[in-house]
Figure 1 (tube, rainbow, N blue to C red):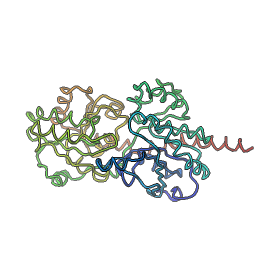
Figure 2: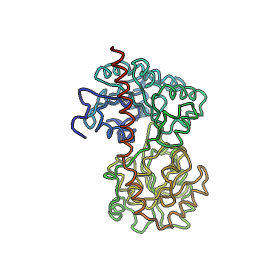
Figure 3: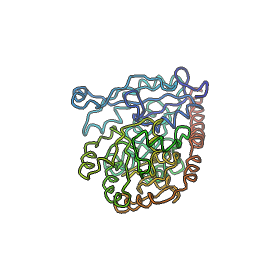
Figure 4: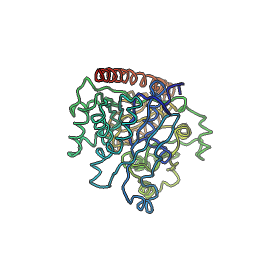
Length: 416
């Protein structure tokens, strides 16, 4: 990290506001936000406010569900940057609709202190409930708020209760970033002024994601050297679609008898369907062909990716899937579904293919063809190389610089 731009103490310019951020108790949560914003922190001092849901008695639920809402410490220092975890009241069920209000109220005192340390901008990730809370805090504290749309806005926009809230949040934000063009179109459809919207996709760290020796990678996981191997990375939830890949495995095995499937991921705040996946594998007789590797750290992911031939994610909804670029940085073609920004990442035939969501026959055919194809791995690696974080961060810094300058100018006028 650049000298002088950490925010462990002293002046800070902006606050990253997101309830989905890595912590000691949820190290895999929101890694894509930290990857992006800690690179911004090399140029602009910042702090993170990551509110955590809480309600009286949730410790009793934890007796039955040990992983339920683990509580992060009130303050962590990550890479020299302060990450605060204020607790907000969040009662399961219909009262979750109050999360935006509750999150803002619980963060108000902290945000007021941070404003005294120089904060001039709130940068929220996900429009609801984080963006709703951030824009409320912005109104209460006289701070501009930006929002980055990351994909959950698609289902939320179809919810008759949440849609009006999204409309209000997008109107109140001074800038609306989106990780894909499809999400920018949604923002405009919901009423955001086109001139205040901007696409800033995610990037890839090729220092962390790169091919390693295939034989060593396969040996690491006890895989045959001559096997054909598919791999998926993501939370074990229905949306990510690992079950959709498993369901076409028997047909694929008829043409590729040496086929194996690696599944990297585990429980997430969105859920855990490992039990259902295990049952499906057993029912289809695939116990020796489907391998659950559990959640892996970013530094470990290059090993299962390098052991594989094709990356697949039969997902129901995505904004901009970082993992596509991470797979490509390890030389893998990507097969995925035509949802969200997937086609914007897998944008050329030499990178993989996109199939209609829910079309099992199309998914099977695409995987079959991908396992037969002699891919130009160098072209895939070049594409990942061209999508490193540098360009994305430069774009964000340009936008932040204007907003922070304007906020400072307005503050000076108010004093006069």
